[in-house]
Each structure stands twice: as structure tokens, then as C-alpha cells.
Length: 189
Image (cartoon, rainbow, N blue to C red; front, top):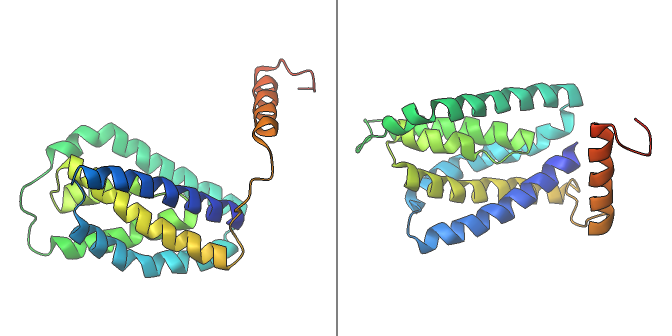
């Protein structure tokens, strides 16, 4: 499982880098906020990469289910979140956002997911950042934290850099899995 988390972080970091380049061209990233929120989170992301080795598979599944449930609530409540955007954040909001960023990045890193679903609401609800800027800024935070996690896990030997199967083998496996699920597989139920 730690190898899957490391590989996931590497893919997430590369994807986030690509997205950040596009958002940078549009001048939508608030780099000041991204560096503050990403910077305070990175030490906790690195701590999570040490703890991922101790995470047993059933606990991973429970944690992942909780995270998916939280993301589902966000999707349902998205309109309320968008309506809550404010112009100026209240005093002390940056401290609350930094604390929330630490927790979000730690949990996301531990589970091998990006964390953008957490950072966008943090930026919108706590700091009053408009959604288009929050999405772009979150993408850059995601790049920073996922790259830190991927680097740490690579140094620990917990990141698969080479694909063990050819694209043809992967497609064959996917087709076989689909057939198994649909009950039409010649290889058994």
C-alpha cells in the first residue's frame, strides 16, 4: 500500500504542475496564499509519509471512505460554499486557514489523494477567495504538497517509477475485469 500512495502522489504532483502552468498563464493563482498554506502543510505531509508505512489496509479503507464521504458532502453543499464567498477575510482567518490546510494536507497525503477538495473550501469559506482563484491556488498548493510527499516516499523506496505492464497488457486486464464484472468472462465468474 505505501508504494501505491507514493506513486499516486507522483502522478498527482505532475498533474497539478500541468494545471498550475495553465492557471499561471491565466494569472489566477494567489501565490502568496499558496506558499503560506502549502508551506505550513509540508512538514506535516512529510510526517504522514512516515506514518503511511504503519497504516494497515482496513484502516486505509475506512479513512478513504470517510474522505470520499466528505467530498460527497462538499459536492452537495457546493452552492452554499460558493454563496459564502466574501471579499475581505475576518481577522485571524489566515491562521484558521493555515491550521485547516495542515489537517487537510496531512490526511490527503496519508491517503494518497490530492487534497484539492479540501483546499478549495478552505480558501472560499475561511478566506473568502472567489472560486476561480481558489481552484487555481489550490492546484498550486496541491503541487507543492504532493511533490513533497512523492519525493519523501521516493527516497524511502515507496514509489513505483516504471510501469510494470505495457499499455496492451493493461487494456487486456481492464477488458477482462469488465467482462468479469458483467458476468460475460470466458475466464470464470
